[in-house]
Length: 304
Image (tube, rainbow, N blue to C red; front, top):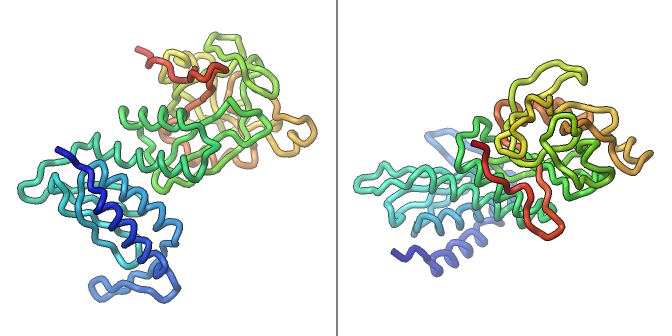
């Protein structure tokens, strides 16, 4: 069945464009059961949600939208499947409990959510490689990742004096960027060699999930569990995330690059706790590098 609704998409975009200027002027309120729910969403948040709605409509064939005056609750109704789709706080969910509805699968709902996030990152953060984003989000669609609020990409195509560790908020698509070290065996300013061999002191590419925290040689540290054949020995190699004095703006100013680890994703001590607070509890981390030919050397087959 053809699910494209070009006229409806144009209508939705026009309706939201007309609606956005009324958001959050400081006085707007919405009565709910006698109480007042103050408008807290800004124009940017509403615009981002509009993109998620457009993606959700495309993926589910929805044909009507009802808009909360505060822009915090968008309801898509009367879909081809008879489902209701809601985008609340930047997260798209579905409700197919209506009579006669054909339930939308959980996989399709997750796909709509991550497709919308990928589109948002492409627009707002073009510095993050799209191949890496799709690799990370495909993994999260295919696996039951415990931490569904944050994920991260360490882009080792970029030099170490740049903020190449991107932590992605999976609810609203916002991004925080930090310095991160690669392994001493992987190279100097740029990482060019990668290995999972013990004693190589090289970084290992691929998807990790964060494990338990512990107090180690570098203080608070976060274990990393390699989820692919390219990094499956990370635990036995003691490859973890930890803070380091050689990862800081002042070190870069003096040396032109951050220092190097023995394969760990070392971060600035100033931000260590904040980073680990977000990534603890089974978050997905992709250590990424694309080969000079343009093929993605991080896109390796999953380990058995």
